[in-house]
Structure formats: C-alpha cells, structure tokens
Image (cartoon, rainbow, N blue to C red; front, side, top):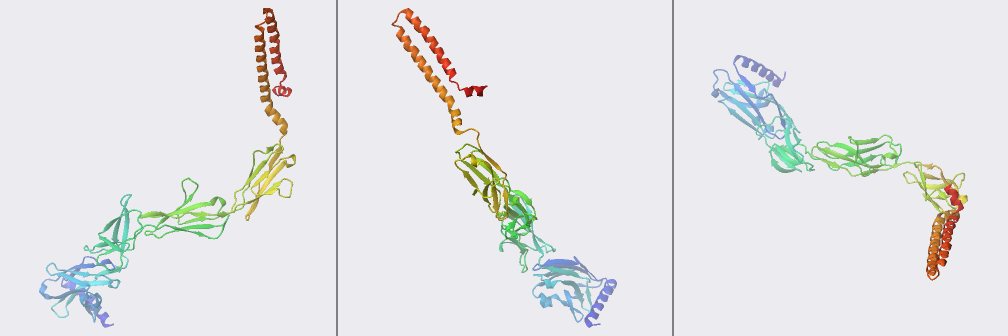
Length: 462
C-alpha cells in the first residue's frame, strides 16, 4: 500500500473512532453543490468539539481537497486557488464558511473541513465532505410573455448560487443593466444574454427572435408533374422557431398547408403550381419568408374552342375560332378540319374570312408542348339556310310597308281637304255629291293597304 493510501485509511478510521468516542462532529449545510463557471460559491459547515476542548486548544482549521504525504493541504496554500479562496470562521458559533470566487471547471472536487489541536498530529475532519460540480453553461434565459407588447426575460441558473449573486444583462453583447429579470418589446430581433456580475466565465446563450426565414427547394432543377419535391424553411432563432407553410391562392387569405419545417410533395401535380411562403415563430417574435413560385411542367389539358360571333354563318361572313389550353410551358396551337391531314392554320386564333359553303364542317385544334399534346372536341361551323338577300328583305319589309301606309294616308287627307275647300263655292247639291264621292275613296285606301300585305307574311301569321 502506498503512503498516501495508507494515510487515507488511517484518516478515515481516526474520524470514525474520534467522532464516536470523543464527540467531535462536523455538519455541512449541503453535501452537493452545483455552480456555474465564473460564479462565486459558498460552502458552509458548523462543528462540535468534545467536552473539555476550548477554542484556544484549536490550533488551525481549514478546508482542503487534496492530501500530501497523508496530510491535508490547506486551500489557501494551493496554487490552483491562489487569490480565489477566503475563510470566514467564527469560534463563538463554531462555524466556518469557504468562499471560492471565479470558480473553474477544475474546481469540481470533494471539499472537507478539518481542525487541528495543539496536540501534535491530532486532527479532526468532517467526512464525507461536500461535492462541488462546476458547469460551463449553468445560466439560461427563460422567456415569458408579459402581455401583447412586452416579454419578461429571467436569468436562471441550473445551480444553487450564493444569495449575493447578481445578474447582469447584455443586448447584442453590450451591457445594459443589472437585475434578475429584464423587460423587452415583443418582435425584437436583438440578442439578449445574462451573466453573473464579476464572472469571467461564459454567460448564458443569447435569446433572440427569428431572422427572415430562407426557403430552399429540392430538387432545384425543373419540376415535372409526378416528381417528389421538398420545400424547406429555415432560420436562425433561439429558442428554436416553429414553422408554418402557406399557399397564396389569388386574392383570398393564405391557405395553411403544414406546421413542419419541410413541405413535401410526394407526387407534385399541375394544381400545385403557385406562390408559397413560410413563417418562423418563437416566444420573441415572428418573421415571414419571401414568396417562392413553384412552376410544375405538364402537358396541355384538353383545349377548349369558341367561335365569334357565331358558329352559324352566312355566305360572305367572317368567323374567328379561338383555342386555349392549360399547359406549362405554354402550348403551341394547330388547327385542323375533320378528315383532313393537312393543318388549316397555326396559332391560338384561326380566322375564316368570306365564308362559303366549302368552309362548313367540323374543326378542332391541337395544343402541344414539350410535355405532350392534346386535341379539343369538334366544333361544327355551318352555313345558315337563309340567304343574305332573303334575310335583308325580311328585316326591311315591315318598315317599308309602314312608310307606304303613312304616305297614302297623308295623300288621302290632303285630297279630302282640297275637295272640301272647293265645295264651298258650289251649290248644296254639288257638295253632297262630293261627299258621297269622297267616302268610297277613303275606303278604297284601307282596302289597298290590306291588299299590300305580303302573302308570305300572311302565311307566317297562320
């Protein structure tokens, strides 16, 4: 057995015998102490000497962690603790404080209190001692919402610190104030951290709201219908941000899609084309990413066709046919007449001028891009059964008939007035003859108007 080991065994046995026979006792307030690197630690004990031992009989009392040649080494003489150790002992109340400032991770050890009397080799040690654990990241900033405008930040240590410990706060690594808590405005992107006053150790990790999120797309190359596509939202924030994905559909409110950092399309479709964005949020604030346009390549859907002004034509008229299809990239269009191999025209619009009977028939368009092609349904273009001359006659005959009747009526009234004037200079019998001659003439006018009615119109009325 080595000398140091032998001394340790003797020391332990001595403690047990002395405490049981002579009444010595050492009591520690705590047997396990945790401290943040750079902080100050107080370890406290009180002791009970046996009867007959006066304070003057105690030659020395100190704390130690190591032994040399079987003897405890006073911390005040240990170079590793130089300038960082203080004792506060009181013989009246029989207590002793160990104060270690600017604690280091290497200070983690078991600390014991020992007393030495005037008798050579006589010492008494409280064992087991106090175990000190020093951590490098014992400080954390906790966030609590005070109201809709303010947040309360609290500096919290995972270790039990001295009552004399004071916290200092930093904003963007610059000191701002002292205190255990701090009020900050909601939505701030500044970085807040805390530390122990006078500590040379590392302070708490900074807390801050999300920066503007960035969006990445995988794969970043062309997206084809049916491909697997992943959108990823990321930002820098502490505490870690929560993510939400949205799609902007026209002028309506954004549609929520996912509450995960990634938005995954296992088989992307043409309907997924559109604008997307994400938000990142933690207790300190919320930020929104830029919009990203997802373009999906797909072949033309079935085209739709329309005719303007109408698909029923008169000879000599013009008609415009329009073809449209949803496709990405945009489709090219070709026009065909049924049962003909050669195209009639190319382009989205096909105009037929000076329509003749030969133009009548079924027409369709073909939409094509690099992803595929699709044909429209047939559109029938026909010639109306009424020729233009007949249609013009039907349109104008009633106005002409009305005009003729008005002219005849005016002529009749004029003739009557003329005869009435001339009859005032003739004998009474002559006037009666005139009047008798006038009435059949007016009746003939009504008969004449009735006879001018178009036989075809009479048939239409029947």
